[in-house]
Amino acid sequence: MLGSTGSIGRNTLEVIAGSAGRLQVAALSAHGNVPLLIAQAAAVRPRWVVATDPGAAKSADWSGLPDETERIVGPEGLGRVAAEPEVDMVVSAIVGIAGLVGTWAALAAGKRVALANKESLVVGGGLVTQLARDNQAKIIPVDSEHSAVFQALAAGRREEVRRIILTASGGPFRNHAADQLAGVTVEEALAHPTWAMGPKITVDSATMMNKALEIIEARWLFDLAPDQITVLIHPQSIVHSMVEYKDGSVIAQLGLPDMKLPIQYALDWPARHEGVAARLDWSEAIHLDFEPPDGERFAALALGREVARRGGTAGAVLNGANEAAVAAFLGHRLRFDRIVPAVCAALENHNFDPNPSLDQLFALDRWAREEVERWIGA
Image (tube, rainbow, N blue to C red):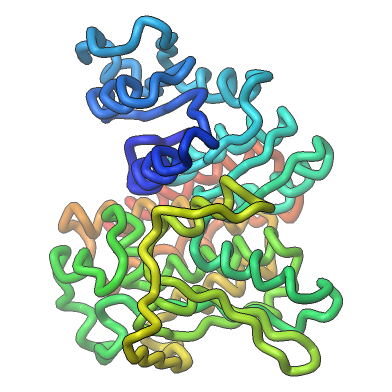
């Protein structure tokens, strides 16, 4: 479980706790929140824990760590535990490009990866999917939208798919006029109407950059052309995504907005078991709305389609620039409506390479962050 102290990690441990022993934790990892990592280890007693931040590990009180649990300090520990023979599945839930390291190690070891780190495919793209093919590894998506598509694709053959429809809540500003976005505060952006997520992902939902990232992820995950990926606003977040087939049939996956459902599906696939996720109440009326997104208000969507078309180094630059711009917004150094223009400027200014190496992608991630800082200070 890579990233056990984050939102996905905590939900995953709830799913495991409710599995009646069917699922067992071999290893946990965290970066800065070492006290919670130790508390989690005391509860599930894994074989290993990895604290990737040496500073946080040094200052922590490790007395609560079970005697049978081995402590590993440093990011290199992610690759070590991911490759251990007794590990048959890796949940990749570290936020941001840092999650690519663990994803890469798990796929290189031929493991099944429950992928909650969308940046692995946004940045790594074809390199990651080729690595999975070369090592007979399997990627099962954990994002609710991609999990929904993965499930709906079981209704037909891939050559019969016309398009997929990724649903989006629209965030808290779906009814704002474009000129209203300049005054959005951090507190307003973090008040998501349906999902409880970390601050970075919540801001991405408000700008709909999360949907741009999901377009790119879906392009690689499902081997689709960018024009086969559509986004639809669905405020209730009940229909998590849909697949439209050539005959006009549309297959949807529904559920309450509870990440434990796609997490359990990824952990148990291809089986289904009784679970701990909240369930829809079909004895009550349910109202579902759908509408196309406003391209002017949500300019991030066009960037996502462009990057999905280009591939190469574009995903690394988009992701790195966005992480830097969101951090600047959360730090009150950048207006909300300037997040997407900052990302666009970095994309326009970088030297595109259609066939990069992994080292190039990490280097461009660093460059994109510096470019956003230069853009803010200009």
